[in-house]
Length: 128
Image (cartoon, rainbow, N blue to C red; front, side, top):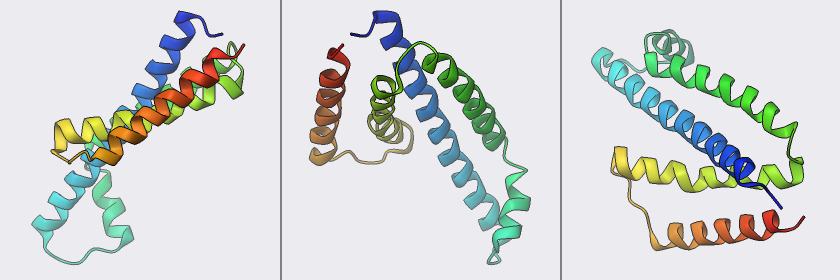
């Protein structure tokens, strides 16, 4: 059975990863805005050259680097078979952030899936 501090660490990890995904979406939106202002069809190299102009990208990369170090810390204390299922909560957090900040819609299927994810994690983490 997971200790409360371990569970909090796993939730924080999932939130950090979800925030990284949110920042990658902000990066993509910024790239679209940059591309629209140049109105030409851009190839991959052009997109990469524009990417270096987007601060959100750097923040997301730094956040992912921190998350990787935090994950290593977590795995020193929690078995992978118990810790890894918590990463599935990113499939709950990211759409919630998308709904809140990008006004993306959440469907009935999303809520049913979220309940199943939480149920699965509860079952896995309760076994000791």
